[in-house]
Image (tube, rainbow over all chains, first blue to last red; front, side, top):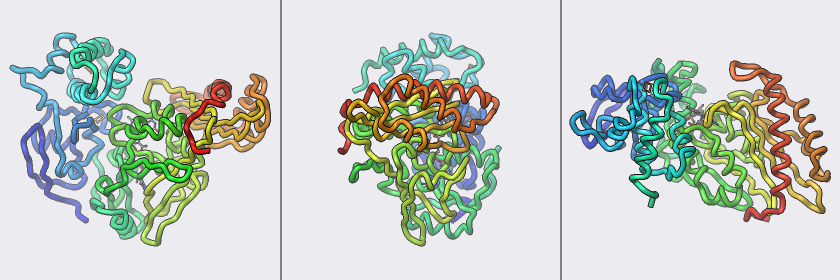
Length: 160
Length: 294
Ligand SMILES: Cc1cc2nc3c(=O)[nH]c(=O)nc-3n(C[C@H](O)[C@H](O)[C@H](O)COP(=O)(O)OP(=O)(O)OC[C@H]3O[C@@H](n4cnc5c(N)ncnc54)[C@H](O)[C@@H]3O)c2cc1C
Ligand code: FES
Ligand code: FES
């Protein structure tokens, strides 16, 4: 039993070891302890999706996860998708389709979509919209995000 | 906002978890998917002194078929229930209901048992557990016990669980072969908590309804079964008139609340409309084989 612990985890391929308070949220750990501020925090109660990251290959709300729970886990954040000079494929599709305006929601969408492309069939626009329904965007009206995902899903082809 | 300070226990086993709960002196909490508990802790609506994380206890992430039931362990996530072949084959009404639960990312983490323990009056899982005559398997340092879902679900966010107890699994009765089913829900946006929902099971014998089961949520402090309405339909022919009567009985039996999403009157109207639709649909499906245990 402890209110502090030392955790070791892999984030975007790099291994980090840090002492953390048990109550520290994974979102705050990423942003404040590691300076990975690409993961955004909107609501801290699981509703907006801005803080979405991948934990052991599946999307998760980092605001509803304790850093201490991620001990030993493999985390992927938006910083791992690409760089300004070398955008990842999902980022590139957002750029081509105008999938963002202010960009606040974008990291969460990009991570959710990464999970969608790895694990979900996405055969129709309805299925795409349903899978996106846990992420809120106040700017785009979603249509251009759906357009980007449709293209990415077509490119990927059926899930094997 | 951030959670208040607490001691964290990563439980290695069920015995370890319930000992830690007992050691917390009534102030411990189990952390499962965290999709309801963490928001409440972030807002400091809940401030446990000890948080018992059960996510690494082995073997709790299983859906198995036992005599006449499907057993869902405490770490069965919503995604697993939604995609599970046993559930789709033996309890199609649950398969249909899971499509309405939350969003992809929340479904990756949230657990069936956690939802039943959370006992939100607008959640699908407590309602489906009532519909399927669920049995709750409970462990504590004092030993194991089981409890019927109808005794377990006490009220809004309130169950019969003692502070040193943990739910290890929920059993759901497999409906008999040929049982008709329906699940109808209305929510403002896909994946949001529902304004109201109904689930119906019924068999057919000699052209009449048998063994009717009706559960609703969003219409009172907790999900409910309606024994009187079920009894009123027993042995009746499946006609629109019978369904209208049943819908009126249901509307009279519920006590919906008004909140920012809908007024009580609107919810009562909705309950009637969903009931008529679900009863007719379940009747239509009677006789179809579900592959369930006889
Ligand atoms: C954006 C969003 C949308 C959602 N939409 C829906 C929806 O449409 N329908 C719906 O039904 N739910 C919805 N939920 C809630 C979700 O289904 C939760 O997963 C569920 O309510 C709780 O399960 P959990 O495993 O996350 O439990 P936790 O949050 O970990 O725990 C919830 C409570 O149950 C207790 N508990 C958990 N497991 C056990 C156990 N094994 N033994 C004893 N006590 C236990 C905890 O101590 C806590 O008090 C939504 C959540 C979010 C964030
Ligand atoms: S900040 Fe985590 S879902 Fe909004
Ligand atoms: S781009 Fe502004 S919130 Fe989505």
